[in-house]
Length: 302
Image 1 (cartoon, rainbow, N blue to C red):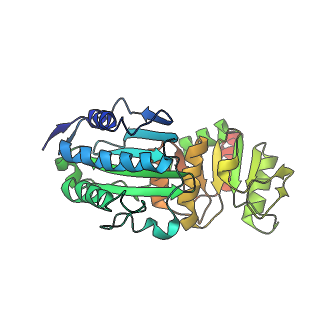
Image 2 (spheres, rainbow, N blue to C red):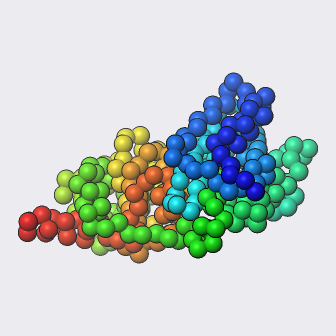
Image 3 (cartoon, rainbow, N blue to C red):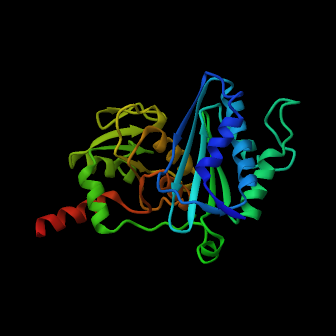
């Protein structure tokens, strides 16, 4: 056990794998300059980076992009994300990728032990966690690690630790935003998925509809997927069931959205933490129409 510079470990891993990193593979490093050294078993963590990055290289098949992000979450935890734009992991096998001897690689290319070993190192040796988010065209591994074992004893992994923004933060989000992508927008005038976007449009926001079952609504052409939207999005407003939120959050991160807003009744704390760890503002289980009306009333009363 020693103080470990995570960035140095990742950089050394990339040097070791440089022969596999052909000219067609672009590696982006989005490092948090404030990332602290952590208490860890350095050589074993390097094995984790090697396993995940090696898999990412194989996934992009010699042409594509691998993004490595680091972030200090709080005084107790850091997170490392390794993302590739390969084909993605099919949903039906995603839950098995940390199983011993399970591999998606062709015969002779993988032992099925790399991710199993990585999981054991992160979870059992470091009291951290490792998660995977994937869809067609993207796979992202998140490795959560305590900055120190002593601090982590009194601080649970910040999954499910969603804290609602205060009134000032909500006001800042609503006043600085101009364009809202509404995922799960409806044409049924009796549903909130329609009445709320109508209100927001009348309040002056640009509405971008996202629903594969709708061609056009509110005078705007609808997109099948959030990832298809090319213009800048300030808020991704979600009218979908909670289990659909992680994929929407992944797409929100991909397109560079600033805020993920889950309408009242929509809850997914892990997805909320994922969005937060990627630098997005998060509002969960809250009606944006109600919050906007409250803000207007406060401004009128001032």
